[in-house]
Image 1 (tube, rainbow, N blue to C red):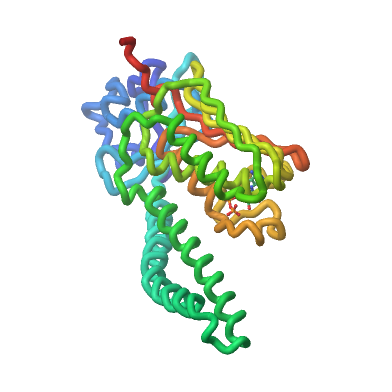
Image 2 (image 1 turned 180 degrees about the vertical axis):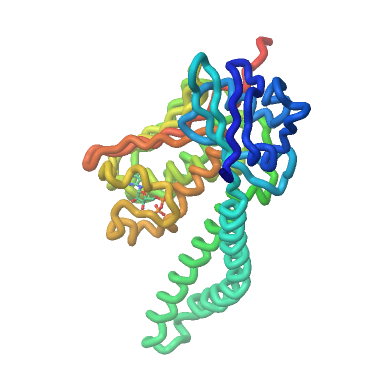
Amino acid sequence: MCDGVIMTDASGALEWWNGSAEHLLGFRRSTDQGQYIYNLIRTPAFKSYFDAKNYREPLELHSPAKPHIHLQVQISLFGEDDRLIVAKDISRLHQLEQMRRDFVSNVSHEMRTPLTVISGYLETLVDNADDLPPKWRRAINTMATQSFRMETLITDLILLSRIETGEQAISDAPTDVNSLVRQVCQDAQALSGKNQHDITFEASSHQRLNGDENQLRSAFSNLIFNAVKYTPAQGKILVCWFTNSDGGHLSVKDTGAGIDQVHIPRLTERFYRADPSRHKDTGGTGLGLAIVKHVLINHDGNLEIRSQLGEGSEFICHFPAERLVTELAE
Ligand code: ADP
């Protein structure tokens, strides 16, 4: 069997393992019998996963013995809280995933320079449109609009690959969510312009959130700008920041067209659109919710989407309680 299989008792003491577990995890029959598994796999994430007993999703980690091996670990409970642990070598899959990310990141960076040159010249031509023969004016204007669209797309692709690959170290500083969201709501009001959406922000908590302010700004603005884009003129958008024992939550609720249930599980995939005909005039890149999802992964959070066709939508970012900063009493 090529997967590593390990059995421990309820306390995590090793009882039995197969030859593949020796190869993949470096366990030694002579010395490791009866040792606690979390002393041999010393990643804190493994210890919390082992203790939490919530094994619906597998855990990915590097092999403690051979760091180039990427493992997917799945635990099952049996008997009296004994554990059966299966470790799969997913290095090849991981490597392909990395190649895909690098490819997208390289292509986006390579395309940026030529596109900047084209856009620059087009902008000059548009500024001097009066000197152009009339038959060229429309073509030049359309080319300028499309090159602007491509620039936005490349900017979002680069942002997404930075967030996803961890190319840029994320800072972990207490972020004032209230002032951040207030700024984003002001920008959203400007984006709404003559559509005069009624954008309200309710801050029911003053607790700050440990995280990367730039990434959080990208996530919150994508959600709030989407609410503006997909809600008809004069619609209502309610943004709330609240905290409770589960953690911190940012909710963005709109009275827009809503989304059919069938699309909801796929919305955060890159370029997935619930209604391709609707997005044409919004100028979106199709990457906004993918960016939100990855920002939340980086902050140990998750995105909840509640929506019904014709009844508006609510997007909620959930952050764990450990990320909330408790203010010391003065
Ligand atoms: P886009 O650039 O197309 O807006 P996103 O990733 O931000 O890409 O969103 C993906 C799709 O989810 C959108 O194309 C749209 O169909 C749907 N969507 C996102 N936000 C909303 C919303 N507030 N109301 C209705 N549909 C939405």
